[in-house]
Length: 84
Image 1 (tube, rainbow, N blue to C red):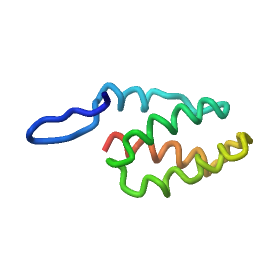
Image 2 (image 1 turned 30 degrees about the horizontal axis):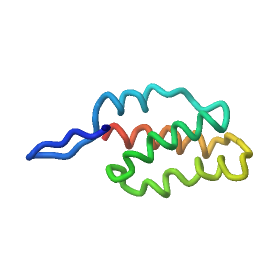
Image 3 (image 1 turned 30 degrees about the vertical axis):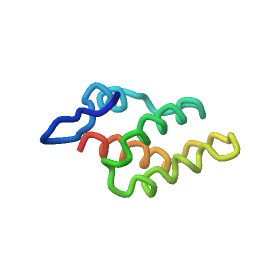
Image 4 (image 1 turned 180 degrees about the vertical axis):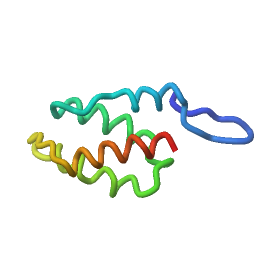
């Protein structure tokens, strides 16, 4: 399901984390939506996830995909936060 649950811990499934890390830079809005959906699934493990995702969310507004350096920074930052 995406999580590993035991008596001692509750953590992300490494297979899913590897899938997120392996995603290339989004080239269109559907790529971005796929990445955002996967990353959002793990938002409870990412401190300040809404702030980090804000530039990505902005790229998806009104179906107008505009990839900026701020978006790229957010994308890379979010990927790094997922592995921590």
